[in-house]
Image 1 (cartoon, rainbow, N blue to C red):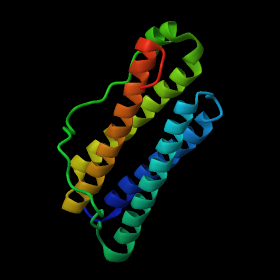
Image 2: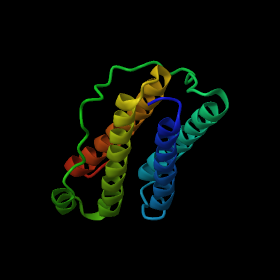
Image 3: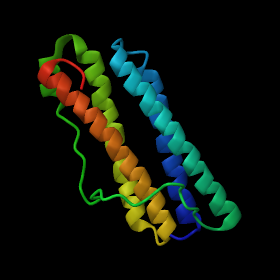
Image 4: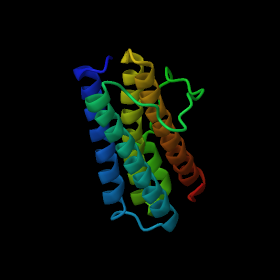
Length: 165
């Protein structure tokens, strides 16, 4: 993926994913009552805004400088980007939870969003011909993987103990 239309298209799609993620977390706040869940959703929404700003900066760099810019503090992690993330089975979980079902439904939807974003960034990283572009998309994939892990920890805690992690 060179600093051409392909790279700009990939970043445009990434920007939309982050905006959609932010909108989802913001709307989800209306559905949940649990304070811990609300704090987690607010934190995830704030992360999506950080990602959105970073992507917008990359788009600006492509337009004005012809290439990606170094992401401050971004160091390639050791995450295995060839690995897929799998959300839980919603039918089995909702039978177990009861009063936390609204929160659990929100987490299930959030897990799906994070999986889609992770998959997109993982593929964009692999497709990029630019080392900085690969790093940008890898950083985004790892951020989404972190979100997935947080959500999954809480999902499993609710499912097993009917409480938050």
